[in-house]
Image (tube, rainbow, N blue to C red; front, top):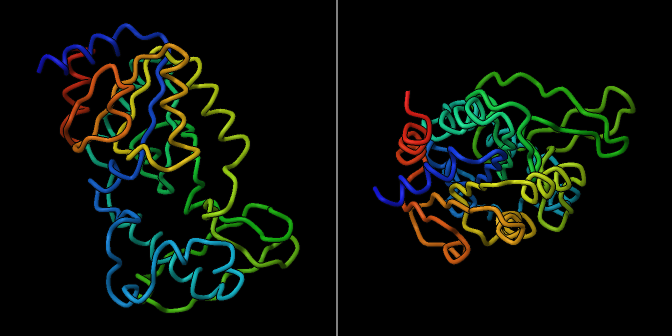
Length: 252
């Protein structure tokens, strides 16, 4: 409880807040992480081998089918209390930037405005040729596990549409990375939530905040490499810890 009060005091006094989230917060809503075993017919495939430009080039129907299955999984779950608490932090601290490594839309559905998606989004596909954004087809039911689905064609140039995520071997979106770096460098407090601190270059964001003088507050059930740079470590799930943190920082 002492650590929670210390974190709440730091948060309440901050003029600029950055919230940096990873797979852990979405896992609490039931979104599988890359470290989880795939289910159904997808057990035959390694997640990391599907999330590459080479995989899409060699078998676009397989990769598109997998991402449609993932999109369906995300739309079937709800934001949890951790996502709601992040939106509440934004409401109490107007100069708040939400930076996420997650490719779902759970922050937006919880009420967060204009989250910075470092790794792209399942809901922002684009053309492989002209890079124009594309409209996703409506989900009419869960895609069969392992079933190949043909990617749609671009309405502008007829090119093949690809998932709007950052694959292994690709660079992070320049605008998103610049926004995240700027927010981390300017923050008085950075909350790092549900991230292992191992996936680079995104893992550099909380370290940059610490070097720039921000107090880093970590929320994670397990120890991570970020423990040693955090001013306060709150070892617990986001959905259980963040609502208590918000209540202490801004008591009604």
